[in-house]
Image (cartoon, rainbow over all chains, first blue to last red; front, side):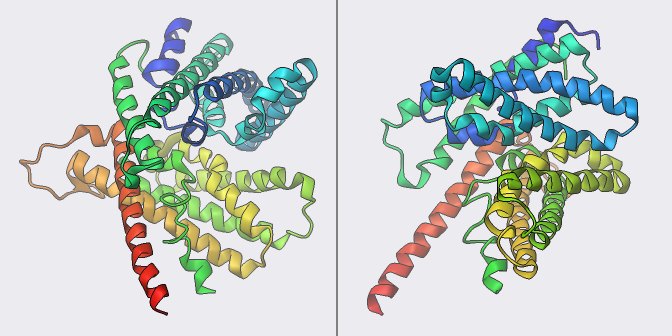
Length: 194
Length: 205
């Protein structure tokens, strides 16, 4: 892997956006994207957990290869992600009660966000070294935040528009997401190919 | 008893009605074959982990139940992952990391929490079959439409005449969102009509 750090970042953030190209983290994308401010907080929390679990996943992958038990990888990843979320929650509660209040229930829910586990699996499959893994995690987090921000902005406007009863809610959000995804296809060719 | 089996197929369909398990639904449905394989893999994990959890449900401490569920699910997902790899390398490559991602499919954890951890083993088996079946049907609905329009074929067999210009967008991520939106619309319309039919009938009774 000789791609530059910047191209790994751009690739994860724009070209292969986790939400709009890989369909990871669709649940929070559809669930908590009603308002811009919650979307930004959710994006921040996810980015942070992504960074932590990317570092952990890097360590686990090499430790498991060392002891010759790669079949434990998936179980180890999910346990580490759950503990990382728990640790982050405790850390945030101690150091910044204000931020903890703001994130609320979204923090524990990150455990079941498939974008996090997806990130850990993808970075292992592609054999990124440590700096590249960090750049990849940052890019994925930024891409997730960007997608959440875009759709929540559109949905805030959409709430004021007459939408047919039949398409209310899930259906109209999916159509908007499809159009956003097509827009992101315009970035194809930037950064390194996946 | 049949209700446990049938509710997942229609009334509580995991994808169209409950909007659970959206990530694999959109990601691997670019062909009918992939959709079917994903549906069956998820159903296997759902049934196997549901039965294990239902068997040991009285032993699981309440505070640690989510962690226990995830560990059991992850074990079966690892088995399925290696199983698919042994059966067909091609399929394994096509589904990629999404087999491992069955662990975080909210449909499975949801059924464990809501059903398997409270009920005996037989209803859990039926529930797993029904929900897994509903999930597979939903995936097939998406996969069939996307493959037919995007490649002019179904399960790899060319169906449409050679003059048909494939809609490439259907195979790309955007197409997944559009087709799912279309199916959700169809389901909403059907349910609306069902309710409209049910209302006067109840009034007459």
